[in-house]
Image 1 (cartoon, rainbow, N blue to C red):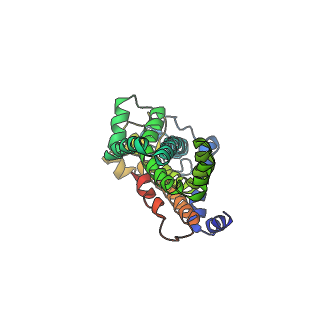
Image 2: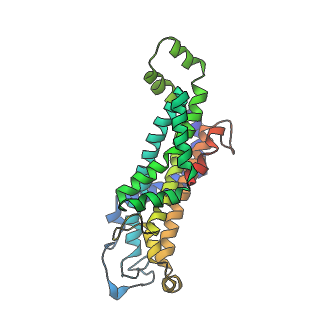
Image 3: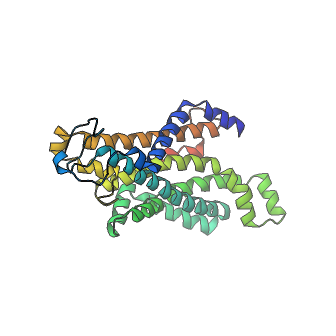
Length: 293
């Protein structure tokens, strides 16, 4: 663990990605301190004002301060990324452990459910689920988390299939240890590293998913600020030509958040896998694609 920590500390990607994440987290937690204006305050007289000393990132078509809405939008994006990925991790780890450890019909059932989930394009599946329900922040949390469990379950299952055949696990079985004890004390700690990597990268994918849903009007509902909905508000031709800041700055915020989590995930992958410096271990090879689906 100390070697992994040393590798992580010396990795510039970890410092840059972690710095971006910490900055966004501070903005989200202390939004009233960072925002100079009311993110909901409509001022039609100052509509589409360019960036200035008074309005750092300008104003939107309703005269609302873009910087203030950007700061409060960080709350939505980060909370969706963390909570939905927490749901995906919980479901994926539990089902992956059960499928890999017990095998047979349990493995068959879980993997067929995962295949069905992964058979649909992720964004289209999210749109269908959210559209069938009433779009809200809670629905976005649940749908992104539920859709994301399959890749995590397959990752955990692959690790468990290897670990369960190791001698110390077989010795525990021979001594009559309960399955729950073996799973929690021996197998689960062995799969923590790829799960942490997948979870970090998965947050970036969840932020992209929420932004896409909000852009389509199926995510966070107005007037709550969201980076995706802010881009949607500024997508008409007039604003793109004469007030590009209304959509450019939210797009940059999404890019910064996704880049930060991806860089930190890549650094964790290399730090936790001493066999590879540039190439991820077999189990982690599909993590990036799973997180970006």
